Length: 196
Image (cartoon, rainbow, N blue to C red; front, side, top):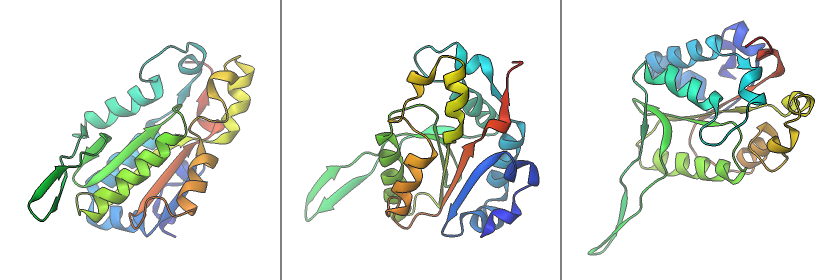
């Protein structure tokens, strides 16, 4: 498994899963994107205020990751795809990728409904088959953060039908994502900072 290439500070603070040699591909063929992801994960901490304040729209977690990566040239990306059968051309647009750079697609699933994992993995499968991406990366939360959400009185907002690691793993192990190399990071309790 290629996760031994990750710095110890990452392997100690994230739950990590890899499929189809994603780390080796990133490290050898996409070193700039690999370094961006490494730096992001080392820099990241989970602020208590991001959980306790709540609110609608894009989460503070997603905003933090988006901003970090956009400063390094990553951007939201929608691919225009179509299917041609004989003379009939039919548009088949994909969902937007949260962060995209040089054939690497990264999705942030902090607290969405868990079917968003199906959307992401199907998107990765399709875009990989079309040779538009080489690796799919997902950052989500570990199940053990539920204790913190409950303690802060926010447990109902982070319920069992929202995006978290065990919901993602069952989908990937069941074959979602197809042949796309995948690298998954789960934010662990160790990253929680009650002082920010």
